[in-house]
Structures are given as C-alpha cells and as structure tokens.
Length: 114
Image 1 (cartoon, helix red, strand yellow):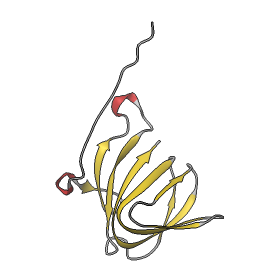
Image 2 (cartoon, one colour):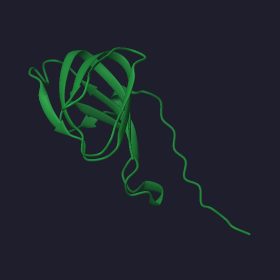
Image 3 (cartoon, helix red, strand yellow):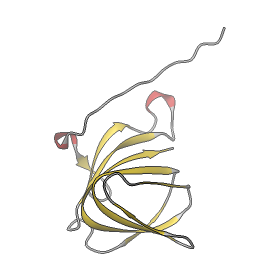
C-alpha cells in the first residue's frame, strides 16, 4: 500500500495580505518549499503602471502560468509572439524564456511557478 502526504492551502484575494515583491506587491497562497515542493509556488501579483512606468525585461526563472483577474499587461516573448492580456486572459511560459513586460493598467494576476 502506498501513501502520499497531502498539502493544501487556500486563500481569497485580499489586498490586506499583500507584501512587497520585486516589483509591485504579492499575496502568497503557497510559498516555495511549502508542502515539500521546492519549485512550486502561487499567489496574486498586484502591479500598477506607476510601479512599472517603462517596459521591463524578465528572464523566466521557472515555468510560470498566469491568469489576469483585472488590468492589462502586454508580454512580448523574444523570438516569439506578443500577448495582450486582459481580464480572463492567461498565458504560460517555459523556464528560460526571455520576455518583456509592459503594465498598461493596474493589474492583478494569479500566478503559478512550477
């Protein structure tokens, strides 16, 4: 008989739980390493155009999937497509992708790093 250990966590979008992030604010639902999964994390990222007034380059350091809850981001992938993401939009990027992000409106994004 095999047994597995389960790890579960839950959170609702709550701006009171925000904390500073590299850019903008983040509300963690699951931090790296919790539940014994070093590479898995997720949460809500909040960013405004005033916090990112110019496009910025981002090397994806993990596989990342995002879903836009509110706002507007433009993400350009080096050697690939550009994505205009608005509420309901989603995208997924492989680790190592070179991207350029533009924050076009105050944005809340749900993200999963894996």
